[in-house]
Structures are given as structure tokens and as C-alpha cells.
Image 1 (spheres, rainbow, N blue to C red):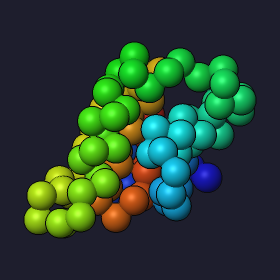
Image 2: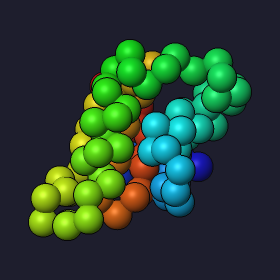
Image 3: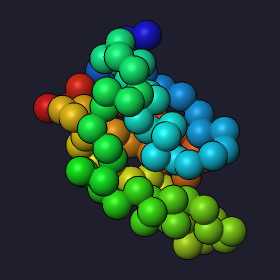
Length: 92
């Protein structure tokens, strides 16, 4: 599914984090875009500390959780939202 977001970036894939490690959700989303196995994707720690990402979004109080975190991994822009939504964009 490719579509435009509100800021004119092309959304390549979006999913919702349903539990388990957040890093796995991100890697699985990138694997979906690249039509490859998640084991073929570079580990997330090459771009961002997966434990810190998990820590940020695993907090109980939404007051202390950022609205979103953005980073680039394997040539894709990744946005993780407080709601658990994970969106993959073309990096640009």
C-alpha cells in the first residue's frame, strides 16, 4: 500500500505494534516493504538503540512518552507513534 501522508511523504507501509519487542515490529515492517525476510534486514541497533526505543514506548504514563520518534534505517524513514502505529516512508 503506497499513499501520501499529510506532509506529502509517500507511506510505503504502516502497521500497529501489537505486543512483543517493538524492534521486531519495525524490522517486520521494513521486511514487508523490501519483500524480504526479517532475518535479512540489518539489526535495528545499527540505527537506533532498540532497548531505548522499547523503554520510551513501554512507559506507563503517556505524559512521559513522546508523540513519536523518527529515525532512518536501511534507507527508509521510520516513524513510531505513541499509539503503537509504525509507519515506513521513503527516506528523502
